[in-house]
Image (cartoon, rainbow, N blue to C red; front, side):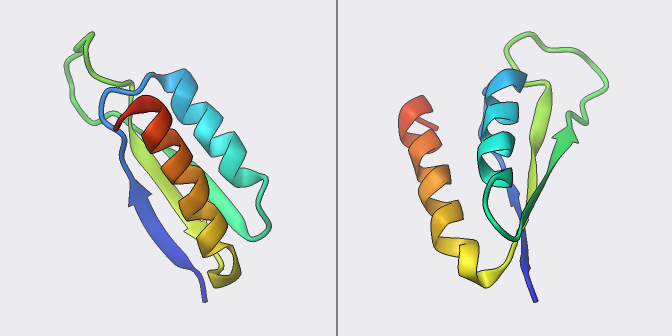
Length: 77
């Protein structure tokens, strides 16, 4: 059985969320869905994405966390 986790990085642009999703999707047993922003009003300083749903098998957990840590450090989120 896999783990499903919501991942949020505040104030990241759509392109970076897509990069993270593409990076994670390359792992065996990992699927990623972009979560659309839920706010009814456009706010320029906010991301167009609310987060990611990441579903992964236990054997991929360490690699998923390493990739997420990379982006946390890179974008200081």
